[in-house]
Length: 340
Image (cartoon, rainbow, N blue to C red; front, side, top):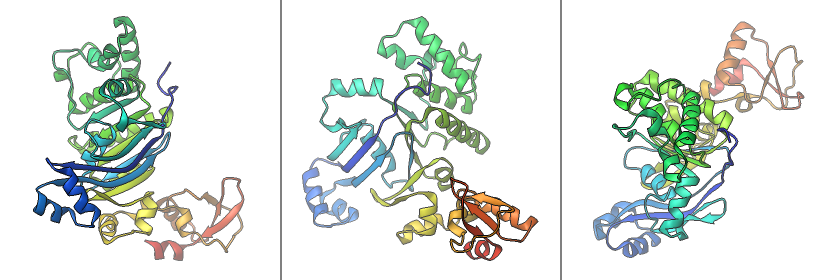
């Protein structure tokens, strides 16, 4: 099997809570009565890390969880990946309840179905790159020659061809992160969890890694849950984005949803500095009732930034066409100006 041929999975998270402390039942009872996170901590000493979070990450989707430090996003992803026990709620992977599994079944799921990439690479310094990448396959019991063959193939995939015999300390930070990514991919997981994997990298290397992940996802079609505190990164990578605050989701939606229809003041603050022209598309600015001759046209998904360039070259309205090529509306300069 080559990377990209494995089956992706559907992840369901239903009413998940995580309480840190010796008496989680007391904290849950107060939370059920509507008490705030701060009140519960003051009265009980218990901390609500995750509060009644539900979502689905579909096959082939990159679902981004973002929020400021302390919002609960890393705790949530650790609960969903079952690296941390869930206090209340259910996590299902392709219909199988991970929260009801014993430790042996969970180990099997982690070996065969899940991979995780952290901010800190966690590479073994005494092992060569190829053995770091093949570690998960070693745990699965594969022979050395098969491990190395698959590891070399994935190293090629992430742009590290020829680096297998080096040691981690001989690589740059960006290259080490590629090794971490290769180690996650080599077991051909159904679900990939990323916990702020690029935040410690230099800006240029970070952009390169983001592009690398987009390229890989275009061919792999895995289910990805990606944690970040950077809204620009969330916009670039996410099919849908959840904005988290105080252990809860404030809003879940596409980047366009969050920017054009923020559900709370917190979401509005998060999105106000974003360049709308880069995120919003023709669908957001077109006039459904004005269908102009198709001397030039754009698709519904064309960015407003690209449309601005066309209107600067020629101020006449532009036709917008659907997937079937039929004209569904038009965009003119006044609509774009009003939006941005």
